[in-house]
Length: 364
Image (cartoon, rainbow, N blue to C red; front, top):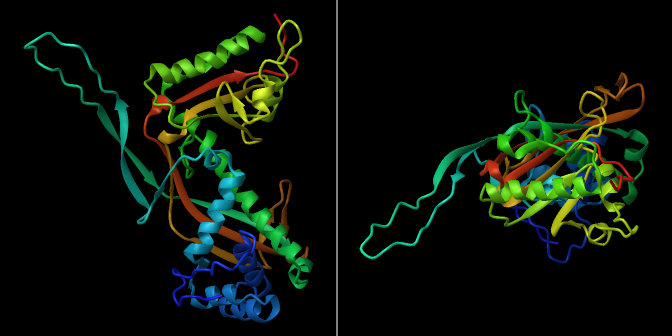
């Protein structure tokens, strides 16, 4: 393998067939083993892991008060792995690089128009109107505790576990924000709160087979009425909603949507299900939401680079209590990245709220 001297320009030789994401995992393991000391981690990668690529990346990389700045090629791998796990990125939205942490894009407000004219008539103005859409990097931090026993033993399975835990934590946090955060705090504003007000509506009460199908059609009509381009449309739903739709049958017991949904599509458009769309919304804590969007009008902005650090003295919240990594013989790894989400045309999103569809959905 051959390497360039700059951390930003580190390029792996084409003959290197290592699994995608191992570079990130091995950076994590080396830093964790050396308590965040970058130079010691470089030597650890060289002598203990036997990975010269990571050793050079750590040696040539830069540090900050918050940790090690991951070189761009490795950060790019991490983003690709998050794309595979996260439903929003998995829908292939437009991507923008927030070089200075911010970017302003033209947003689409209203469409052009055209008309037939009589002879010698003036041609009317057919110019679309635009609005400004700004993306500003929001900090996303993922904390992942790793057993020090894993770090002590040099095994490929360790790299896989480290990689999957870190990427999974980032993907879940990102999806939760990109879907439903209202943008009033430090997180991005999600699709739910960027949709045009008229495109957010409740399911038809007392759902039956006919009402469910009508609600799906109504969502598509919302986008059509708003002059959505339908370049890259797709659905996002909860697992409960997915199950209800897959098992939906007609009066003769024939499945209506199942064959299509087994191919990952609904009403002609691709779909994804995720636990990040909750099923416990509403007064009765039994409601969910369904999203339909043209992801060609959804933009994710990423600030280049990520920051990685590790600590054996840190404490973290395990979902019930604050625990100390030291007492559990763990190392807590923190990955920090910055991103934002914007929608160029708010009419390109439809959100069905109050969804209580469960299997089986009544026939009538």
